Every structure is written in C-alpha cells, then in structure tokens.
Length: 418
Image (cartoon, rainbow, N blue to C red; front, side, top):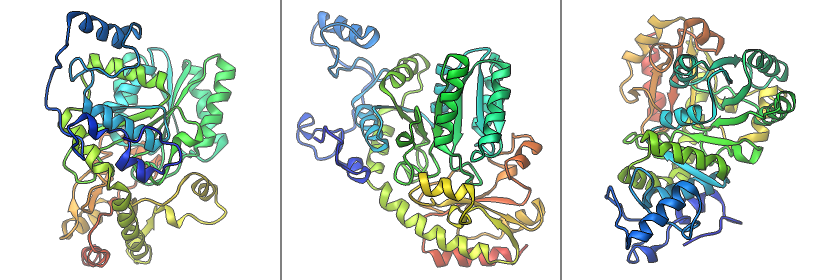
C-alpha cells in the first residue's frame, strides 16, 4: 500500500494510493464491500467507535472502523484517499452526485443572512442552487462576469458584503459551457482581503470539473475546497453519478458529518467504479484533449462558425492567457462554439448529427454535443445567459475518444444543414 504521496505524481497516485491488498486477502484490486452495516467485536467497541466518529475522542481515534455504510465504508476510504492525494489536499469526501457535493458545501458553510459570490457563466444546476434554493433560506448571491479582472471581481465582492457577510466564493474554472477562466490566485487574495475587512475570511471553492485533477490543481493555488463532478472525466464512461470535494481536513470533517445526516454519501458499488476509472483518466483525457484540438481547429476555420471558446486559442498577451499559463496544464476537451444565427440554425445542425450524441453531460468516452440555452442552462434567465457569453447559437461540445477525423466529418456534414 502506498501511504505517502510525497514525490509521486497524480497519475501514479490514481493507481497506487489508498489501498492495501493485505487487508483484502491479497486481491490486487479493492473488492466491493456490498454491505449496509458492520459487526462490532464487543459492546464496548461499539461504544468506542461511535465516540471516535461523533465526538473525536476515545481510544479508537485515528483508527479506521466502520459502523454503517451511510457513515462510511471501505470503498469510500479508498476513493477519498485517492482523490485527496491526486488533488494535493489533506482529505476528501465523496457524494452521490456533483450537485450533491455542491449542495453539501452550500448547506454546510453558508447560513441565512450571509452572501455567496460566484461567476458567470456557471453550470445551470449550480446557478439554481445559489440563486433559487439558497435564496429561499435567506442567502444572498452576487455574481461577476469576468473572473480574470480584479476590478470586476472586487466590485462584485463589495456588492455581496453590502447584503450580508460574504462567506463563500465559488469559482467554476473553466466555466460551463464557455470554458471562461477564473483567476484562482485572485480569488484567494480576494478572500484574504474580505476576511481582513469583515473579520471572517470567506472560503474559496473551485469547481474543477472541466479540467480535472490532471490538467489543473486548484489546491496548489491556496483555495480551500476543490470540487469535481466525478460523473464526468474521472468516471469517464457516462454510466454513473458521483461528486467529490477535497481540501483541509477540518473542512472535510464537517462535510462528512453532515453527509451522514443528509444521506448523500456515495454507495459502495459506485465508489468502486469511480476508483477503478480514476486509474485511466490521465490517458483518456490525453487522447480526448488531442482530439479536441483538431476538432476546435476545424470549427475555428469554418465559415458558419462565429467563434470557438477553446482554451488553446486564447490570444497571447491577454489577461485570460496569462491566467491559463499560470494555472492550467492543458486546454481540456470541453468547449463551446457559436454559430452565425440562433436557435433555428443550431437545431438544424444538431438534427443532422449522426456520430456524436445529442445529450447533456461531458467527459465521457463518447463525444457529446448540446444546445446550452435550451438544455444545461435552460432554467437560467436569458439576460444572465447572455452575460455569461451563452447565445442562442451556442453549442457545448465534449470531445471523446473516437477517431478525430470521423468527428470532423460528422460536424462538416451537419454544418451543411445550417
């Protein structure tokens, strides 16, 4: 078993960290522990393990023992240890979906009367969480449209603080669906500034889903929490739902304990599937990103395409390019392109697609495409969509593992229908 992550790169940690074959009859891979509950060897042990879990005291503190799978299970132990090691964090918590992870963070760290700051664009489900669900609990939300502009971000923070203490700064970088970047160093500096002004430092949470742990490591930039929809690249086969958060142990402890109450833990079989898939995510993303570059170049040069948001095309000398060079290791394989025209032209193109799949989600082995305004961001108000760069002609494309020329040929045929 690899206990120490020092000196090991994320690709190695994804395969070798957090599991001891000696604890599972020598099985080279972790088994699936399909059980809802665990047997205590004695009544005193039962009391001690509950004391250790709920109070953090007693003779079993620091040891690994299980009570009931909603509280934790061996599959979670392996997955959460690997997630934390890959992200360079102290600890991790896995949830039943990416939105379960987002909701856990919101409900754990934000209270009625407090404020949240997030960027635009942002995933439609997260937009609904903060601007509708959390608003119902008396939480205030402010947004920024350019996460690389210090003046824009600070003005939004001032507006948030005017409505209530700013306790959570949310950055989705790259953003869904346009791949807009947020300067993570700026967000950490902003949190420090706000903390000095209001006497309490807000947490910085970064949604790292579009690049994942091998192309961007937010924890290295000093953020408090790194969130990933494990449904996407980390699982990578469009066959499960899961989410993860990594960060400081004290924060993860709070998330895990409230997860026990909410029941949003990741079940044993899905945890096993995600841990298995983590072993290959680096090579899958490498192929997907190579394909995405070729597809993006084709779209950039097509006369019916008005623009492409692929990160690899950021102009030299621009603020966004400076942020990209500082915090990203690669451009990812999910981006948007905008057609000349609007919904009618987009629908004609999508209905002519034959190889790619017209579906929401991203990061799977297959290439997925969708019209953002009428799918993933349907519930976001039109003016807010436009503020985030989502037009009626915007399509989100998640490039998969097929041969790139077949993907290009499919797009070329479909664009003839526009």
